[in-house]
Image 1 (cartoon, one colour):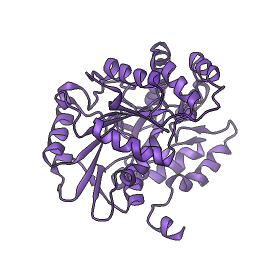
Image 2 (tube, one colour):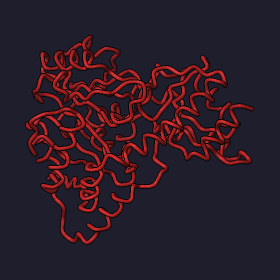
Image 3 (cartoon, helix red, strand yellow):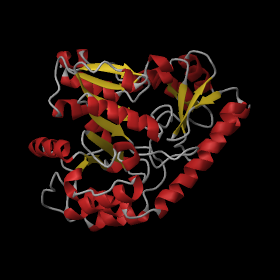
Image 4 (cartoon, one colour):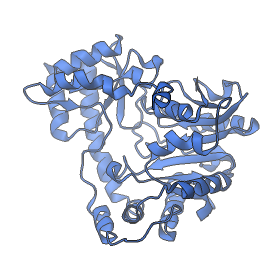
Length: 365
């Protein structure tokens, strides 16, 4: 165990515990804006699909039912603009975090191989590289990376934590560069349906990939769009050869999405009304929190998509965390996502309407 822990960074959220305790001591209770976990109900039609499939005594398959694969390919064609997808172009996964953490290992990466990801990024990209014994490498522009030893390039648009969106031209240049150097691209697009000031584009869009999925895979999740974080429902779309290899590995590992969750995923991807309803909730909360934090002297950067505001008062992030915790508001320090975030905080707008209103009142005092 010691050997494992020594090659991994400290789990960042443990460092936030003292500030969470301070915020929780507020007379009106904590307003937790630190983690982007859904708080609104799972849509009724998805709950019904789950319970209708509850009598599932047999083992599910790693590849999923034909109905699930139809739902995945159909949604990707409708929503992402992908064309000509077959079942071999999709693969269900047990939530996107396990995929991010274990992908380098499943790809067979090891010492001497490199995994690249944005300088400000979800910490699990680094964890995945380290679990495999590979070298984590950060970038500002992926096309300026040294391709020597680079086996896996992570793109993340919309970004967690900044909410920045990469345009078609930026995505296309990254894909062309990676293909020219034989580097596999995985694009984390879990916030793609949550664009506010721009419309995020998938790496699978023909204007980006040229109509070919060679060397590229997109990662999608139902956690945010459908309030299904508790279901662990996510999937991959892209290069059939890459997904075929992962399918075989995941069969050996027993990495199966449960049968009721597969049925719930079919229902979720077949309905757009609940997605629009949830977007409206988040839009209201985002507008209220943005105005309140800007009124309290914060500057918001990027944040054109996703479930977060990337905010700064031009001070060390832990000073901001400490001051807000005294008002009963908990936010995430920017250095959780890399040294470049050390003067920012990430503010989630996944709290209930009542808690958002409480934060707005406290920031106005």
